[in-house]
Image 1 (tube, helix red, strand yellow):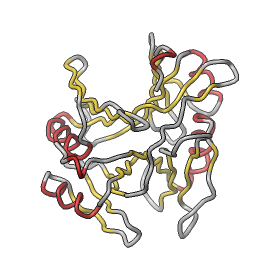
Image 2 (tube, rainbow, N blue to C red):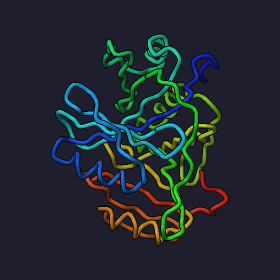
Image 3 (cartoon, rainbow, N blue to C red):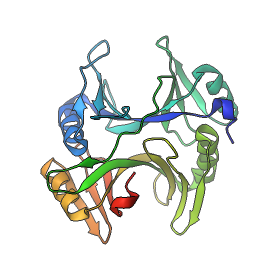
Image 4 (tube, rainbow, N blue to C red):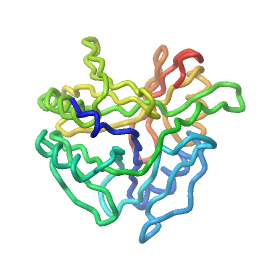
Length: 249
């Protein structure tokens, strides 16, 4: 497990879109979260932040120069460079050391993440919608090819540290949020050849939340008791999970 001095203190999810899908994707996630969009930044205005009404941000967007819609993580640590060295020893691949103060890496299964040091600590509250229900992005989920699953779980346990919960049915490795804005779940994908990722939204009214997200541009793939699988603009999956109001993050 991660040494205490190297343990991450925050996670940020980047929603990465190619240029042709960027505006629709950003518009959807602003509507889905109720968060405002920051002023663009970067050399070509390719980065922006979804800013919650209170608490620290944990969702950002990037317009890609190439590549398909995807997610990547920013893992916030005190010293990105020394952490990168230890993660290389654990099976990670160093991709880039940026002069802007972050390090880009890949996990053993090929998932891209960045080590950054931006300070954050205040978790944004759930959003109450006009219809009276509540929701918030609550989970980052990594779907890992079966043959790489055990290796990837071991790597993420080293990367993120903390206490992990392993569930046999369905097979899952879960890192509870524990002061972070969202928890992290790894699960095996039996037929996939590449690692993929998606987000979960927790809500206390599944029907109302699905209707709201569909009106913002998502398409329902499947709706089951307590859970719905949607397709967000850009083609990425999005799970909506119903839990009691008392258990909302």
